[in-house]
Image (tube, rainbow, N blue to C red; front, side):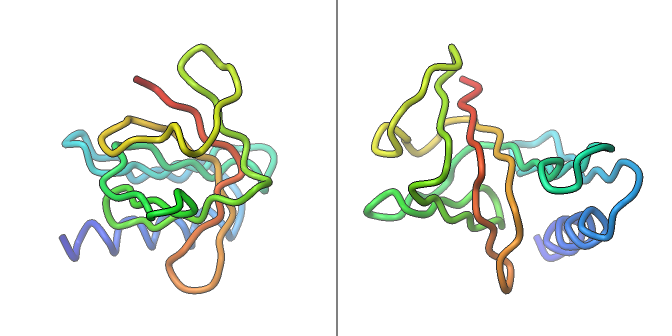
Length: 115
């Protein structure tokens, strides 16, 4: 568990420093973090199953990553249609584009439900 936190933290730090492709992927349902080359602000991606939702759906947890969802977050269902954050459920597989906040938290810019 600690090793996966370190891998995710390293991927986020390396991804924020710019340049190249950074990836920390896991195939066992834990989150994967990627940074694609190109736009530095939109290339940070976390994907995985939602393990915890805040009571007002303003935050969620995927593996060891805590994400903040606010009114600026764009949420899309599997067909690409807009959806409300109240529609999110524990166990949903999602992909999030994010920006970093202080500590280990991130703010979600865009969330896409995968299944």
